[in-house]
Image (cartoon, rainbow over all chains, first blue to last red; front, side, top):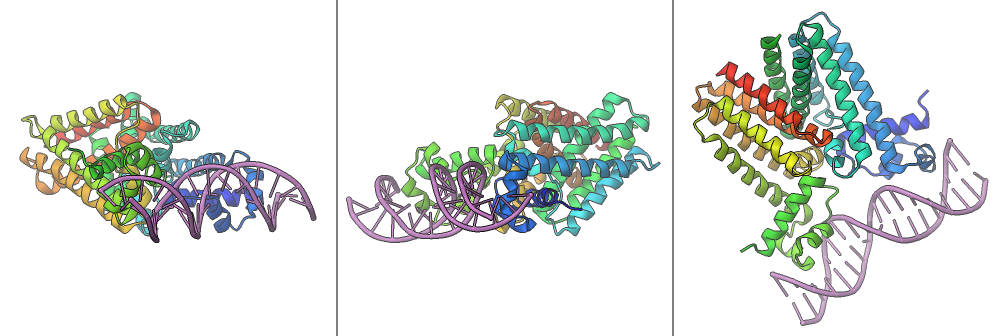
Length: 188
Length: 188
DNA sequence: GTCTATACACTGATAGAC
DNA sequence: GTCTATCAGTGTATAGAC
């Protein structure tokens, strides 16, 4: 069921998450995906940039779904979000600090060089933000405040992933989870 | 007074901050620094990696000094740190979203590929963290709690810079400043 | 300390057969 | 849809003269 096209996208997602945009070559993508090289430009005529856009859109949607799934539980926003972030910490450690922050590096690398990639990152972040904000609104937090807290949540998670991968420890994201949870609880 | 060596380091700092590690070539560094190409490997025998380490160490120290300068004021930790983060937001906007997060991209790009660069990033982050924690301890917050809050502060700033550059808006860091300030005030 | 020239790998991308 | 071959450009790094 996984077509060649999808196989290329999935491999690209993993490599972008691990190495970033500029360190990931098309040859490596072709090689590790086991896909025929000749078909890359058939499926992605726009070359590397188009492929990267498809890849982050793909992983962005998966993450969005994961956020929503985790937040539908009846827990309070504070507890649900705290639990979700601690879950990220667990998974980052589990991957031996190779995964986490699937679009973080691309966002920084391309913010000043590619408007199309930058805007796609922006779109994904705003979707994630809306998902967190929705949960808090349902929990009784005013929508404007919820929007701001959701922005902090995204920022703290992205930064927390950076620290975890740099320190090779899950502690930063656990601290982020607890402190953010505390802030939401005080607000709500 | 700016020697060739220092000129190369400064140019490298700017390019790394703007483009990241893998997008920045040694040829570009030589060209934009106006330095003689032949001298690059004389000053940095270890090549690109050694140069990058020197560069982030250099900028890391500058930022550390800036943090300390901003936090010696008599304001409460909450207000001093809030003000400092809003100052970052202002400067990111002022640079047309080209500056900010001088080691963020490098930390993510090299976390899985270069232990020496990763450890240098780790060292810098911990120095920044200690500076924030010190201010809070002086303000009466228990040292363990101060250490955790400082970790959140670093994470939220790093993530906030990512969002600002991606959205081309200073709002994310301003929100981070206000919410983090609120959390510290509640704690202290 | 600096210069020029260069080696060699690899990049993204394209052409044309199949 | 896929394959092979290949292009022009760029990457890091080195050698040897000055």
